[in-house]
Length: 143
Image (cartoon, rainbow, N blue to C red; front, side):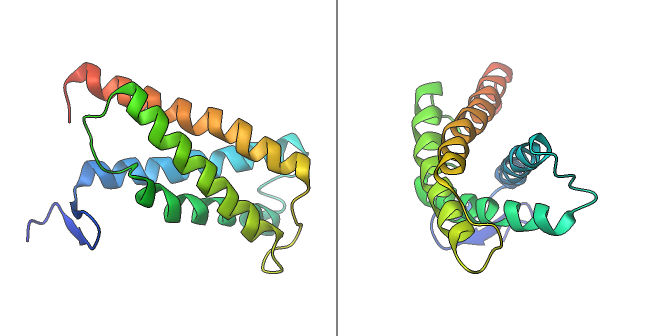
């Protein structure tokens, strides 16, 4: 087995570029959630438990749904394709995150305005990030 790849059951090997994109996606999702906390005057530094409890459900949602939606397959995808796949992935991931956030496993719950903001604004953020990445990658000729 190539040292640059890790075997996965769904689509074969994951190369380093895909792994880096996945890590970057998780960072973008986490930063989006943390920005929301900061906008509500919750300091991630002074209240790390609230930060973790709010961030984990959405990161888990992304990690579960994004690979199933095909976000990490088809490196040479059009901007429209990236937009469609990422939209489907985020709507699914946001719903998984909201279900987890509303469960007894996490403190705080999720009221309907939170659900709308997480889904709508999160869609803008994650699709914007993925389209910017796809544009950058396609402009430099990388796969």
